[in-house]
Amino acid sequence: MKLPALVVCLSALVSVNLQADDANWVSLYNGKDLKNWVNVNCAPDTWTPQGEVVHCTGHPTGALRTPRQYENFILELDWRHLKAAGNSGVFIWGSAIAAPGAPFLRAIEVQVLDNAFNIPGKNEWYTTHGDVFPIWGDTMKPIHKGNGMRCFPSEERSKSSPEWNHYRIVGNKGTLRLSVNGKEVSGGDNVVWRKGYLALESEGSPVEFRNIRIQELPPTGATAEDSAPVDEGWKPLYNGVDLRGWRGGRAREGWSSDDWRIAGKAGARPLVSSSNYSNFELIVDVAPSPPSSPSAGPHILFSAANAKASVGLAARPKEWTRNRVIVRRRSLQLTAIGSSATVNTALPTSGPWSIGLDGGGAAIEFGNIYVRQLHDANR
Image (cartoon, rainbow, N blue to C red):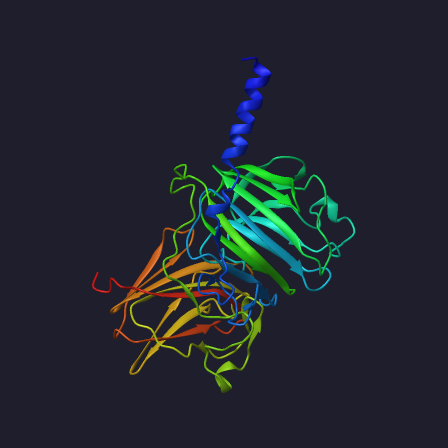
């Protein structure tokens, strides 16, 4: 066989391997409810099933993800913005919860941006649709021109609001390719992570998705370093639009909802959760203003029926720091992400505890507040 013919045959074989078998598609939306999805950090009514579509209000900024991870796959979906200049995205190989100091997943983002989102000079660093780019710690090599690791589409093929657009996203062995309305336009190679969750993005404007389906391709042995951490059962304590889930009345004075952040004014009383928890782990991101005194600073306060306790959070003024607090029986351990130092302290009781946010007298922002129950409390 002549070499050109061999090349043609090999190319055809690769193409066949990445074609979906119509009999093996799995729908990711059942047309009735969102029980096959996980609300990462949005309000209960941000994402709603409306017949054939999944509707998103756009508020707050956040994500709706699959309950399990995917490695190699072909994903197809339709999307449309309900208002001109709408912004959204599809997260590929993403984290289970929001990245530290952000409402977004660590992932590869496939841009879903309406054509009317037109800022002068935008093509210096993004296009209106079809960009593929890593966010919040992911990396990739763009297959053609872009900005840094961002890949611009070879041509703009999206239809403007309120028309529907079709995306075909192929992820295989750490490569990603996007086809818009029937033609491949962008992608990336050497993607890290290359196994993780798939998610739809809420980012400020109403958007709808439909015909969301997937076909998995054979696994190729993604390592732990190549993969997003598996969900540990985290539940958000803040919904991004209001202070439901936190005690009302005067207890809320000085506190406000600011999209994915809870903002506290200087001197505000602690904001306390409505629910109590025993044997749990807490994640909270914090960004304080400079403290009012050297000894002040952000705290988490714990209150039980006849006991109180507090722990100072690791924090840098005007920067985001993620803290993890483990409360197990009568012990507490705090670790700041990115630091090997930990704080260990004894508690006067095993709870159950309410959780209070305290700025230490200074203006402050808290974000990405998650809790999970521990089932190894005797350890």
